[in-house]
Every structure is written in C-alpha cells, then in structure tokens.
Image (cartoon, rainbow, N blue to C red; front, side, top):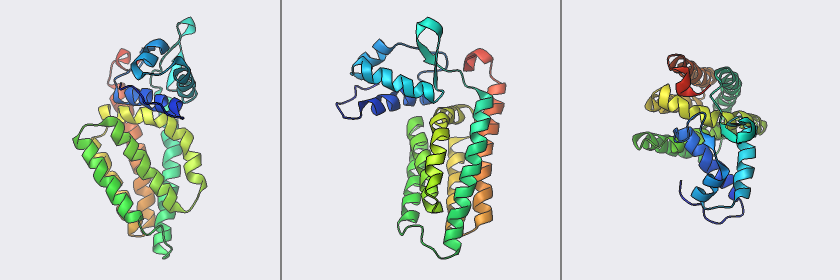
Length: 231
C-alpha cells in the first residue's frame, strides 16, 4: 500500500485502500487485520483505520475474531447469490427504463453515449493492465451511468448497499469466474441495446450479466478447497 496523503476524508481513502487490497486478493480471506500495521503502511493514525474497519465490518467484508480483533471475512456464497439476485433486478429495471427513454425520444443526456464509450474503453484497458481494483471501479461507474440514464433517482441509492458488499465479490469473479474481457463485452452489449432503444434486450442482457457472474463464481468456489477461500 502507498501512504495516503492528508485529506479531510481520510477515513474514506483508508476504506478504499483496504478494500482494494481485499478485492485484488492481496489480503485474502481470513487474513488477520492488525490496525497498527495498517496505519503504519498507510501513513495514517489509528483513528481513520478504526473508522474504516467499522465500515468494512458493516459491509460484511471483515468480521470479528473474538478478542484477536478483525479478519477478512470468508466469502459467503449464499449471501453473494442473494446480493446478485437483488442487483440483477435493479440493473434489469435500470437498463429497461434507460432504453425506453431512448425509444420514446426522451434524452438520457447528450454526452451519455460518449461517457459510456469512454468507460467501456477504459474497462478494456484495465483488463489489459490486469488492474483488478480499476476494473471494479469502472464496472461500478458504468452501472451508475445506467442508473442515471434510467431517469429513476432512487435506483443508485437503493443499489449502493449491494455494491458495497459486491465490490469484494467482484474481485473473486475476476480471479476465479468469468473472463474479465467477456465481462466488458457484456457491458458493451447492454450499452448498445440501451442506445438502440431495445428495452427487452437491455433488461435481459443486464439480468443475464449479473446472474452469470453469480453462477460462475459459485461454480468456481465449489471446485476450490474450502481452506483456499476461507471458512
């Protein structure tokens, strides 16, 4: 980890730094998280580390281990499936509504197509660079862009709790499940359906995209010795 520079929102940066290492696999499941060591590595005091740990615990990413402190939580496959079920419903709705707005002639933002194309290109570049945290960051950004295009301001806020849990899961998907390049090809297909105003295709592609991620990860984990994934 690189030391974090002084900032008014240091807790959020510490949270992101630790989560990035969990998502990338640098901090695997069951890793004992020593706050003093993390603070030293990040160049911060213990307070923002403690606050970040509280957030990660609330997200289900870390857990208590009795009197020993905290560790990276083993991946809960059942919880993962539940979160992806909710995400699939929300992403399907968002994609359908976005495509319906295009089909009806209502604007989804004059620069929306350009922003979506940029995110798709950046996503492929992150795949080429094998930068897992960057792929996750761009994946979330693309889905947030689709929520924006839906015209429903409640979708992004409703999805946020799931995203906090799924950011960690997505790291596992990228390492164990689907091909990262295939994931961005799926993203491109969803964007194309939205821009074509094809609401049925946009919805079905978004749902398939999410549920396939859950299925492939569950299959990969079932073929992996339990100790290798924690638990």
